Image 1 (cartoon, rainbow, N blue to C red):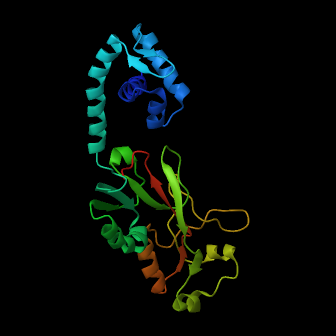
Image 2 (image 1 turned 180 degrees about the vertical axis):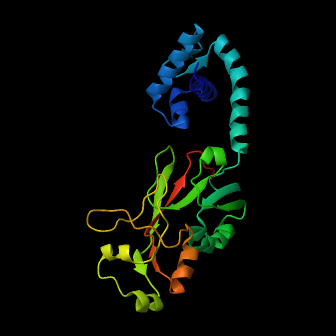
Image 3 (image 1 turned 30 degrees about the vertical axis):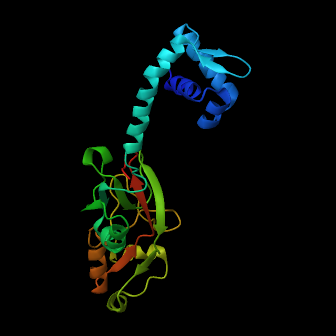
Length: 249
């Protein structure tokens, strides 16, 4: 038996009116009538005596109302006592990001987030590896690139400017490439694509980039090497957040 049938019956018994009960419940009067009829059919006994002006409880209806009213009141009280998590977020949120994204994009906003949501504790994990949200107990993952397959919810948060950069000392030593394909003859610094990852292509045919002169997935280290005049540096151009479907507020 659906709880809504008992809720509707309790409203009619308390107000003594189908019209008043419908207004209180925010439904049509005809729906109230159908609900009472369905409840009487399920119980196999009339609960109300209806006339054009008056609605009276039968003996069975009065006995049911006396038992149901306090139970429904207790349920409503229990619901009211549950804190509104949407208005006051609290608890712990576990965020994972690559080291470069964590330092450049996450760290600057954490202080303002804590001021706005002081009851939320943020635990940050900086790592390059792909995570499994349920297994690794992670709520939010910040990553650069396209979302991979799986049951996660991905949302694009913004874009970063793409480009290739080199120190003047390197250009004096090796010259300036005229075309993208010319990077094959230069010492580049970029994260080499691993399983389930993509990188930029070289040339109109979309060939894979040449092997990096220094292999590292941390852009902070690659930038430091590039500034020292050792090689070209490639920057990424987009980033996304992936959240699990079970992420907390």
